[in-house]
Image 1 (cartoon, rainbow, N blue to C red):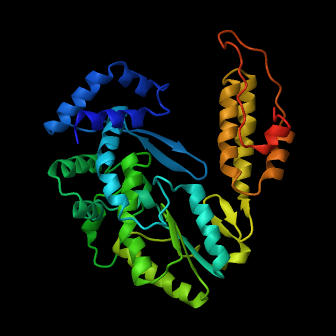
Image 2: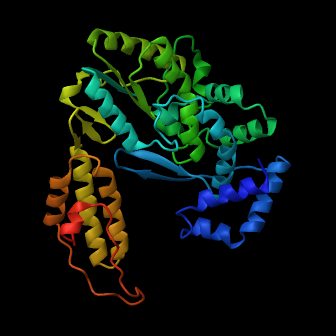
Image 3: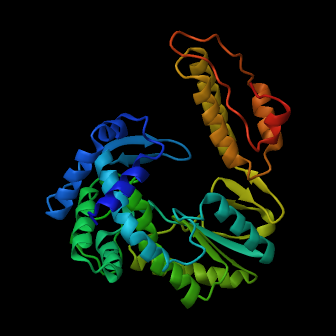
Length: 370
């Protein structure tokens, strides 16, 4: 765990895309010394995680994000370097969140494939997923695979550091057999930790195999707390829904039951910001409205000199790279034609402007959006 090569690789991963940020830059200033300190603390069991920095995001929905100090993020990567490959081999192929070669767009592709083969879909999601994850259940699943005492010690330290981070996000739910002390059970994984994303898959893996083996549903996929089952038998999906709710209770989780309805695939399936049909995909209206509002705000910031053109363009390209997986040509053309941008003069200290090159976005090949 504390081998130099592992810590160096962990630092490189933690710093990727973050080297211009103050926490990463400060760590990099004395990177060798900082890694040696971490190495010593991990070796003699004196390592203690630091305090989280909390903030909220409001799109696509309100969430409390908890950012660990940079040195702790290095430790998270060092731990995941060792145990993630072992667990990943145990996950079902159709678990798409936070895995190499998977991701949002692969999950959308797979859901559309299923919608072309089956008549009905049951889509469900979990109530307050990360705040509700129970530490005792997670620790048991991790310890079934991880046998090294030093790794289990580090896992315990990270779990303890995030125990009360999301306490204000969780509404206590009592399950069969609970007593009043159940409210004191440690729960919650900080949204924003690399370990939280990975451990979410570990926590849900027995549930995934329950769907595949015990329910016998071969057309199933999951992305974090969103999952979908497909069948040509509507009654079968209704039966599976009841079994799923009971199984989730064993994991001390609940689903949004009223929203979990069996729908015909031809009518479209809401999934990860899109509405997926067997033949095409649409972007959810909320996504377009939120981007348009943010785009107008960023144009004003650019014209006022608060951000550079490159920063404005990066925000636009990030959105384009997501929505181009749906039928959004007309939507993109409408938004950018309705909000033209006038290039402002360079300000002192900005240096020579370099307009970014555009790759793979047909609309911008024909007409510059600014």
